Image 1 (cartoon, helix red, strand yellow):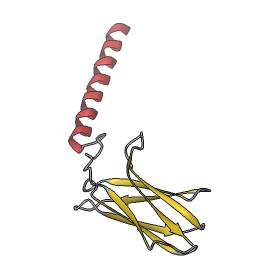
Image 2 (cartoon, helix red, strand yellow):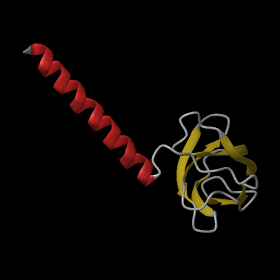
Image 3 (tube, helix red, strand yellow):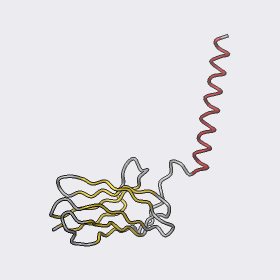
Image 4 (cartoon, one colour):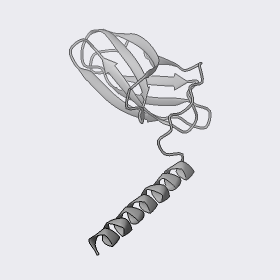
Length: 125
């Protein structure tokens, strides 16, 4: 009797995995956006002012994807989020906290390896 139950449980689990995998594939789940090879970022204004708002603008990214935007100032890292529009562009912003050079890295939000898609830097006075 227990062997039949184990077999039934195994069949149910396999069916559940196949069904969920098919559903993810239909939604495009688990796939990274294809690199466009032309992704760039820039920051405006440059130079920014301590306490002032700056904006990171990205172009040339895959359309309709979400990105992490890391801004490192040598002491701390600000993490912002952005989504590209149908043209593969985005903008996101925050306040500048420290004077000096800040570096920006843009990664695909769903890439667990956090491969850098674009980098740029800006000055804060």
